[in-house]
Amino acid sequence: MEIKVLGTGCAGCKALYERVGQVVNELGIQATLSKEEDLIKIMAYNVMSLPALVVDGKVVGKGKLSTAEIKALLTR
Image (cartoon, rainbow, N blue to C red; front, side):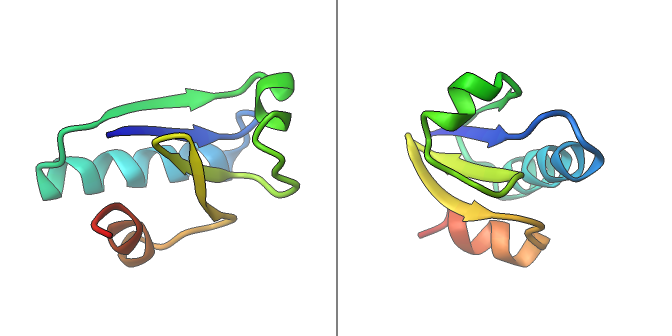
């Protein structure tokens, strides 16, 4: 699984990245987690609100996501 957090480096983006990392570790998911801060690359995902969560190339969540929401998105 490839997971990306899209964001420009704001506090909300950093917090989402940390929460996603915690969930991945807690659930023992085999995943590559990365941050994408390049605005041109972010625009390629056609998102208008940040942060956004991308799993295997598909945007699955936007905005402030709770730990429970992240768990639900990653275990579908």
